[in-house]
Image: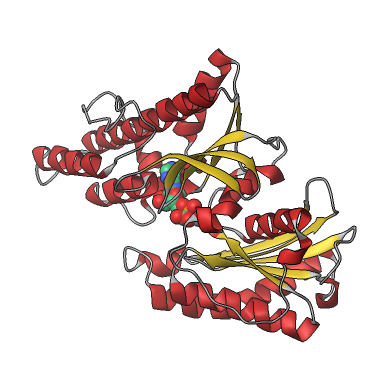
Length: 350
Ligand code: KG4
Ligand code: ZN
């Protein structure tokens, strides 16, 4: 097996959904891996016409984009293909066809170079992404993972050591943003659009439920919120004013953010940890960041975020998580070039 050497170059390929991401990190046996280059192509505009991600179109577009993005990253880093030591790719969870493109390209490339591969869990990528920020966290920490498909609170003691403390029993926080945005007549992806509209509105204008806020545990539920938004929309009649829509957007965002903030604080309190890491697409939400920062400031807690550009899907987080796994156990890399993907893959099994 490949020995872990100083200055090892790990290529990361992300293709689980609607972003093709490629990145190169450099890592020694110890210390934080360093991002050398990254390139990203988002398919948002392509899917916009359909109001959501069309899996077949996503796969085809990954095929078109991934090698040009690789060339771009190599050029930016001043590296050649043969400088790559390990090829990491997103093995799951995600869209099966889209994952297969990344996995297939990764294994073919690695085979042609005679280098090993490593399948990475997409959520582990999100979880580790704040380590590439200017203010990296230290283990152990509480992670609030809020993406389009997941809402989880975890205790993280090391890469690969996760204890699930609570999660959504129905919709994810990102889904709550996306579905509410759709009800408000906003396009895909709904989260950023709803957040932008919310800036013009009054967060207290519409009383919306805070599901499970006082449940005493660390679970979430967002399905009822969507129904409440639908009811509020119906009350506004067929032609709500811009002001009314902005008020409802602001109230929806306030409901989601309040639950996320309070449950995160409760997780910190219960575990007596003082460090929170926020990861996943919803972590880009400015109101969430502002409220977490304010609450943390008052309590002497630290909150770490990925750089804004690394909140949503990207190759850098996959290269990083791959490199951190290899630092822990170099034998994880495989050179048999057989691959499978795991469209549904619990993080606990990663
Ligand atoms: O992590 P991510 O890029 O993809 C998944 O792995 O799911 O997260 C995408 C989710 C979408 O639901 C999107 O609407 C949401 O993150 N999102 C936001 C913001 N930016 C992205 N939600 C609220 N505010 C934002 N600024
Ligand atoms: Zn993601």
